[in-house]
Figure 1 (cartoon, rainbow, N blue to C red):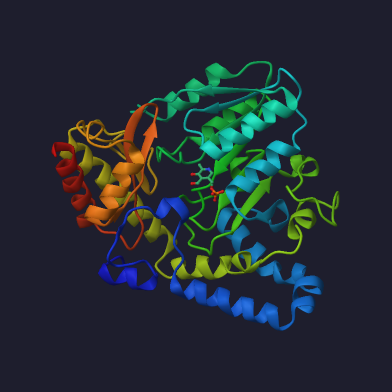
Figure 2 (spheres, helix red, strand yellow):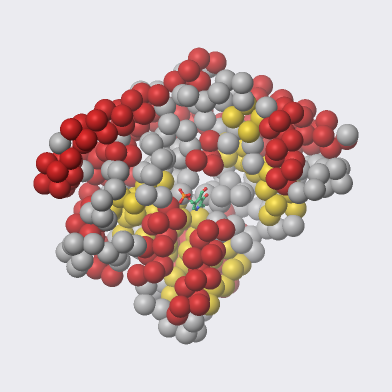
Length: 384
Ligand SMILES: Cc1ncc(COP(=O)(O)O)c(C=O)c1O
């Protein structure tokens, strides 16, 4: 399946070694063509399709996405991105001064800012526990979170896959732990759909938000928020519109006039990647990430961030950079730009817990030689 001609399905510049699928995803040509066709159709009869027809148009996308994530269509709504899904949950909660939200230091910065805003508005505190790398195993994460729970904990907000770190969190164990204490869990699954097989109904979290524009390769602006049935009446979209209090699915299907074509194309993206076999796509990407973690940690003589068996990796791996770079580059942005300009490699360099890291993404259009080139380029820049 994967091979050099895979890239031709995307508009990605073949002159750039693209190791950053995780940032915004990348949409295949065929899915973009479907989006253009949808746009033309909607523009031909805007009122009929968007006003009278909107609910009907979303039936098939809801069905297809629901089947893909293990959810009933009425239990989730489309949103524009995971940030919006997180905001809808956090800003719907009625928190009081002294309430606690437990999260980890892997939390995505935009989410951290939303938590700050929430603290300002409600007086609730965020308890941010450290999960340092290398992480020895999934039980270490669960134990760390368990130790932070108190009688004031109202919510645990945990990444499915850490943004900076690529670590796959043991969300099922965390949900089970919190359920036994009567605490709700919000899973930030920005990277979950397409990277990991999902069964949201079976997971049993109170809330799960995920992007379709990252690893499902849908157009940008395709994401969802799933809410467990017993929590649905309390959750509202960030934009309150005509259907307030008419149920989660109704409220989210209309959030004001907007371009809904990214949502309409979600089934095209699921089908496009599905032609290669979703299990095969996930297996390829995961094996490449496990291999890249091992190869780069050997090449740079640094510790791998997660167990070598890949049990805490999906399709991304984050490694500490070797010494010598901080002396030569002003900051991570300067190093990232240099690698792009000099080596034509697009890869994020991240300052996390006061150390510099690189995160590699693995998608079907990537191959081993690209990570080997990164390994050499970094060594070259580290030694001058
Ligand atoms: C863990 C995590 N949460 C949230 C986001 C935000 O995603 P979006 O920009 O699509 O809202 C990201 C983006 O990379 C992420 O990695």
